[in-house]
Image 1 (cartoon, rainbow, N blue to C red):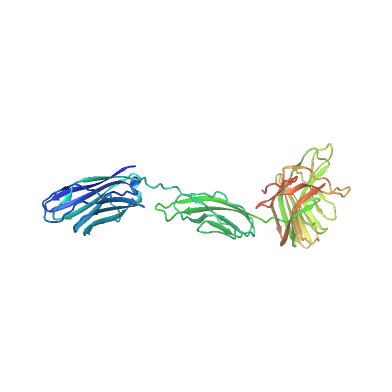
Image 2 (cartoon, rainbow, N blue to C red):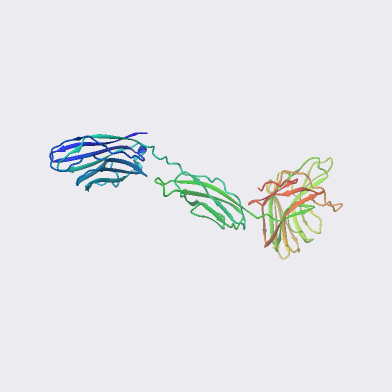
Length: 444
């Protein structure tokens, strides 16, 4: 707390009597100063007119403004000045029975420790004036400007076709806040209001990165703060169907003219023999007996190592091996595409080793479904479904895409012996994962 001094001095130059009010005010400690009247002693001065006596003085600062008042008892002329100059500080004005009251705006660049001097000069033709007197007041601390900051650091995920509403938050500064985007774009169907509400119905799955800014324009010292946020839009959850050999996702509708994805080839855990696991992309096979597909299979027999083989197949014919060397950990891309005229192109590429295989085959199925599956395959000798191999790590299907009109989607969960042995994750913006066991893995 600082002391603020208000000083009245007696001046006489010939017939001119002037009273000077000097206020040395520290901006950092001048908030809310209210001084009592200066009940000063008087000194007689021979003069015929313009008596100024018992001045009452107030110096105050509220909201970045300085107000100085003084009371005299005659109509005189008053002159106000300041060092440095303050905006709104009048130069000359009449004082009639005379409440002197003028307000000045403290410049923002004065800084927290800068001092300034205010002068009030009251002029007449003579008279009596109060002897110099000092009024001391304790000053309250200046208000602290709190740094404006964005409090929201993450955004909840949104779902395609679902209502979304998230209020952004900020701290510091001086509310109300105003929000806007400075970079990036929200997913289609969503918008940001000036009040900071992100809302709407997202239309497409994906990830959007945005840069938001919040401002406090009504503050005495306006500020701005920014934050980079990420918003993920996912597909709605699909109905779950328990199957005896599939784990993954399928879409229905069609006709479909293409399907593709990239997946990681897993390894099988020792001690699970005899067992097999296949990963593939296909058209048809859900609700009909037709199927065109391609993928990779891992098998283990007692006393042997894991065998890995790429293959393609069109039911009812058996699978055909593909002459590629594939190892666990490789990334394999599978693509099926209708080339027209009843001919389909099957492409399998090991993107890790840069080996590729392509074949064209005649296919006449209805093409009313598309699948991305981890499967417990059927035995070529008995035709029965084999035990699903305990595979590690999770199989991730990246960028599962299709061409066609999908009217439905199903999540397949593989059940053997009355227990869930494989389950997919939720669909993420980049695909999904399939795990061995009953615990769903996180979406990639």
